[in-house]
Amino acid sequence: MLDHFEGLEKRSKNSDFNDYLGIQNSIIEAWHKTKEYYTKTDTSIAWVAALTLYPRFKFEYFEKG
Image 1 (tube, rainbow, N blue to C red):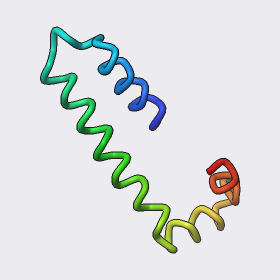
Image 2 (image 1 turned 90 degrees about the vertical axis):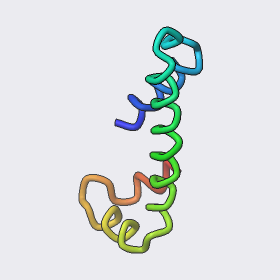
Image 3 (image 1 turned 45 degrees about the vertical axis):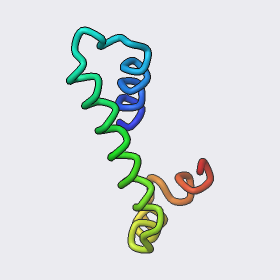
Image 4 (image 1 turned 60 degrees about the horizontal axis):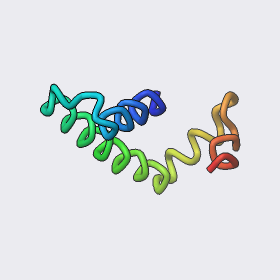
């Protein structure tokens, strides 16, 4: 899901949305805010425990880092 938003940010920086400056700025600001909160989850011990205990992810998330 984050890949989709990252792709939108790249498109907006490549001027794909020049006709819609409000949308372009919103995409960039939303992506920066998402990254800000997403990086905070890595510092939460509850998040680390939940990912480690979840059978689908285990340590894969941390190994990709």
